[in-house]
Amino acid sequence: MDGLKSILLVYLLFYLRCVCGSTILCESGFCRTYRFETGCAVTASECSINNATHTGLSMLSPTVCNCCEFCLPFYGEDLHCSRGGPGMGTNVGRCGPGLSCVASDDGFSYCRRMESECHSAQDDYEARYEAGDVGVLESPPICDGKGSYAHFDCVPTQTCYCQSDEGERIFGEVLNLGAVTTQNMHCGCSKMHEKIEKNIASGLRFPVVGPRCTSDGNFNPIQCLNRTCYCVDKITGRIDGDHSINLDYEPIKALSCYDATLDLFPSQSQGEAPYNYTTPCLEDLREKIEFILKSEEDGYNVDLFNNLAGCLPDGTYSRIRTTRSGSRICVDETRHQLGDYEALPGTQQFEDMDCKCAQTTAIMKALNERPVCCNNGNFRTIQCRRGLCRCVDSDGKQYGRESDTVTSLSCYKPDWRNLNSTDCYAR
Ligand SMILES: *[C@@H]1O[C@H](CO)[C@@H](O)[C@H](O)[C@H]1NC(C)=O
Ligand SMILES: *[C@@H]1O[C@H](CO)[C@@H](O)[C@H](O)[C@H]1NC(C)=O
Ligand SMILES: *[C@@H]1O[C@H](CO)[C@@H](O)[C@H](O)[C@H]1NC(C)=O
Image (tube, rainbow, N blue to C red; front, side, top):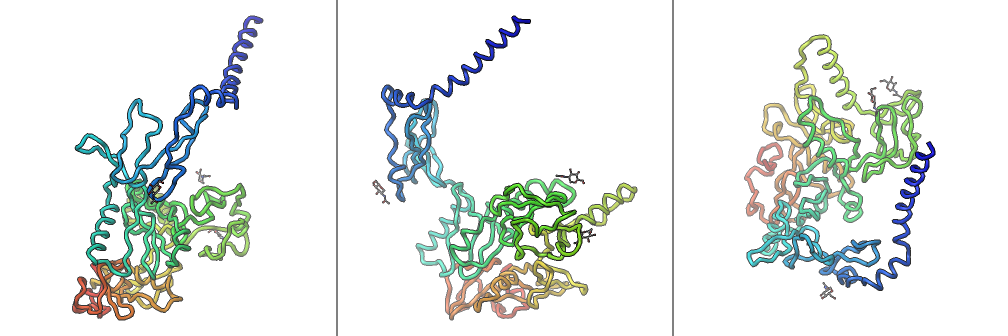
């Protein structure tokens, strides 16, 4: 028994020594000696210059105890780069954002712009710019460091909206107030919904309910799991603080992050407990799913809701609503009609209705100069402002040069002024 104890003791001492040893190794004297005996490699100058062409990332050196300064330079376009490999020096840098190291015919490698749809769109814009074919309200596509589209796009003088990595417009739109807007537009929630939709929802029977977003595509600061609600960071969606409430006893108003302007259905927090934090669309969806599951349990074959529609990322119904008479109207998040946009069944305007212009003009309601929408709430292809007309796409974004002669526009159609015509909007 004593033998075992002493073995344990020796083992423990040995173990402790190892742990202590590794912390003792890197105490301050070690680096002084290391620098004196081994010396530090000269750091790349890029980190200390840090101007438009010379940038780098200051990091801990990849050596024992991180005794040296280290700078990882970012190489610019067309500069030599190394694709790495065993025995590469520690001062080898990387190609900067949006660039990748590509082998060339001359045997060397160079930093080249990554091939991506966004970069091609930028090239196209630049070529048209050189040729003088870019409109006043056109802006170049913005790409991120990986060559994907930036998470939002803006139409000058109108709105900014969220977009996917592929540049497709997704949920989330706000008034374009310049830098103030773009700094607060992160679209993290909206992009998460888009990824859920693209990657997992197609394999499931019922629509997936993701995190609750706000109309700008950020995370709603209040998120609930079952009956427990807590505050999250609107940019990252991560839980913020450790305060939570239980809806059986307290309304969401009791949370410090409660913001009345973001509460679309405040009546759920009024009166007596239990309180709720749901939306008519989510409730509707839940009831339908329950009904289907219950019917199946009872042995019925339910093909009733084959295409069960999900809700928008803010938990509300689609912005296109079908009326009792079968026509379609544009609505806001509380299902109230926007303007008098309407399309009758059996018409092309009905089929093509997207209500994007109706949404945008509603967001711009306090402004005088708003885009013109067709009767179905889509953007009119030709928009005119201060004597100049231009072609816009279905998001209201200009393409090509403006002109004071409508007939010279590439999108010109004789019936463009008729808001009830299919020539009114781009198809
Ligand atoms: C950045 O600094 C380097 C080195 O001082 C210089 O050669 C280069 O011209 C500078 N680039 C710009 C854009 O100022
Ligand atoms: C939510 O409730 C369901 C059923 O009541 C339960 O199965 C699930 O584990 C709960 N989820 C959490 C995160 O508490
Ligand atoms: C919350 O929902 C429950 C069940 O639908 C309902 O009975 C209750 O009145 C709701 N609470 C409030 C404050 O609306």
